[in-house]
Image (cartoon, rainbow, N blue to C red; front, top):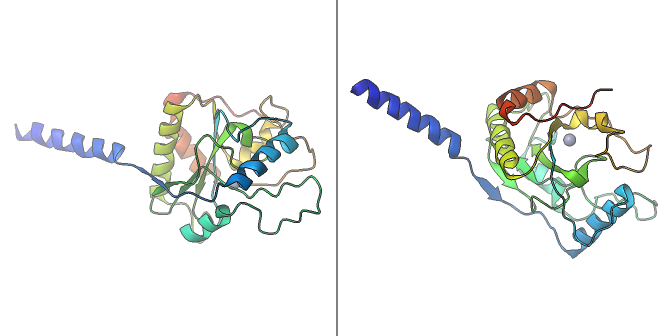
Length: 219
Ligand SMILES: [Zn+2]
């Protein structure tokens, strides 16, 4: 009898660990100007003309901020315009970078903007993807076990809510060049990325295998 009680206790503790995750809303500025700049970005970079900043998510992109603190990371996304934007440079959008989710080092998940609004976090694929940023990622502040757990939970949450085909690390975005989802119009607009690391991706993929996401295109 006692054995059964222990097993029941184990199961309930295990179950509560699985479901006790929550999302904390901590909105960045998403005013009329940011909405206008988002629509402008969709038009200029992707040739997509629409009267709202909404996306139909089919991809999740995991990142690290390389900024060691939550506040520093949040501040990078908070304002509407890029900090050093020069409006005189033609064809470069003034829309600030952003992400739908930001995961703190203790695993707390913050939602920074509506999940179905376009964020600016990955060249070529913002129109179809939800971004998950993780605080830290440098040698001194490697991503934590709690962040890994929260990323796995978030992928589950998103894959159950939307028709997600792809789960990728930011460093893999370049492999989508030439793919039907790739819409960036400027061949010269690329940046080299390593986040969130191959080891982190391997672990998240292993834990979310049941969703059978499509393989990342190979070059
Ligand atoms: Zn990134």
